[in-house]
Length: 428
Image (tube, rainbow, N blue to C red):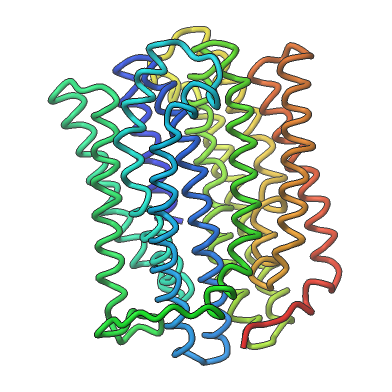
């Protein structure tokens, strides 16, 4: 949870610092970061596949195969990320001019500058995500927390120096992001070289592609990746709708997203822990403990979500003052933040924390179908309807999001209460 808090805090610090450059810069960074989040989600999904498979082997006390999973994951993720980075550079103009829709020229110029620098960090995101997932599969989240702390300190200090010291614009946010991700990737790989760890990179490292092992990872990673990527693509599509309402709406949406990240943080963090616990219980064939720990962690998720979101509601006026927004933008952002916080207390955990127990039990196809279906039918369908045709503007997009949460919750709770997910094949 501390690691996620650091990441979200730095994200907010970035947006606050870049706000000093102007609302067009905030809009540009938020647009490009929506694509970055898509890529991060893809690599996180692949890393989750490796973590689930490694965790199940650890539950079987088969550390040798767990180590092989780790090596295959990191090398495969590195090659895939290099290919994606190349494609993103080639398609950069298409993303800015077509995907983002009709944006103002100064926003487009800032987005182009930011993207040129940040896209180079894609391989480092993949390597760090893979390494962090492997440490979590061992139950060792302290390492990832400390690495995240180093990464985020570099990012924040770098932003402050370049923006306030050298009066740089979006470059002042982009360069520290690239450097911090590179440092984090190097650290996580160096730490995984410790052969005393249950999952480690062997010395000397002699990589040999293992088709069977990679397909096991992809068996979890691909459905999860499709779900995550379709989810983020849907958000990008809706962001292009928001962009049509003007810079004030884009900025309000960006600020609300930054604050909302804090609101879901406890559920997200507990969901990561749930993957580790459930995958090891599944590997040991103990579904009674799977249900026990799922219920226990869900209870903690709900309690912590309520505490955090109530605090956010009371702190909203102060938060918006820090951003130094225009009156119009501030009113829109406040309305969205309070609406999101109220609903996050009651719906987010069942919609997003609970399905991690299903994924760790290899029931990834079901979570993929529900996630993709609800995103494209409910969130996008209602989002366009409410925002454009019922004249709710950017707020309509957020109303559709809550409807999506409710639909997901119904399907995932129903699935969990049954037993079909308990008979999925466990990796041997």
